[in-house]
Length: 74
Image (cartoon, rainbow, N blue to C red; front, side, top):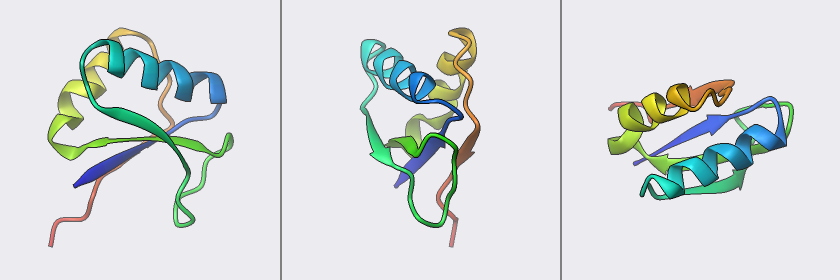
């Protein structure tokens, strides 16, 4: 399952993706899904299994994430 991170600015989305990839995480920029809204229209998709580590990485690098959208558990 994948998580989605949304951002206020395009710059933060690109920085997030670059930082994740540099740290060895699989992450890619995607359009914000229709059921999620964000100002810049870009989001980053990454594995839910890596969510805690990626949150920490973003925090350490002062990347401003608007929201993390986690898959719903059924």
